[in-house]
Amino acid sequence: MKPLVEIQRVGSHAFTYRISAFVAGAGAAGDSGTFDSLAFCLYDAGASLGPYFPTVELNMDGLFVGSCPVDALRRHPKRVAQRIQQHFQPA
Image (cartoon, rainbow, N blue to C red; front, top):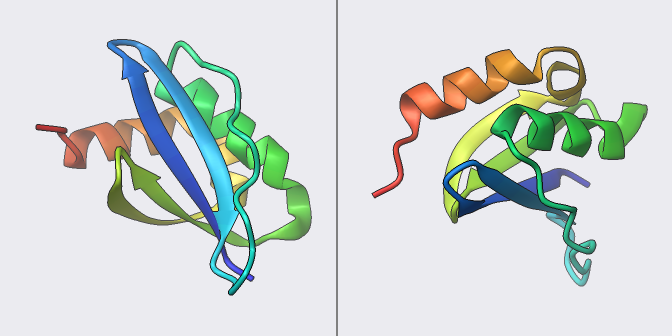
């Protein structure tokens, strides 16, 4: 199973996420709360996945962003958020 974190921007400084899996028949987990920064959103997603998965696929506003070590979401969420924001500018 390979988890997918789908991040949605719900305001100028508000984000939410949903975790799902690339497994036939697997349903998505419930939505998270709302976070006031992308870094907090990423950290919470990483904490939710815990040590059970080495990597995660990331989508932001419906676009594939890439793969990331789950540990990086927990230990360096600001760095991951900066890289996403540098390379991903929504229309």
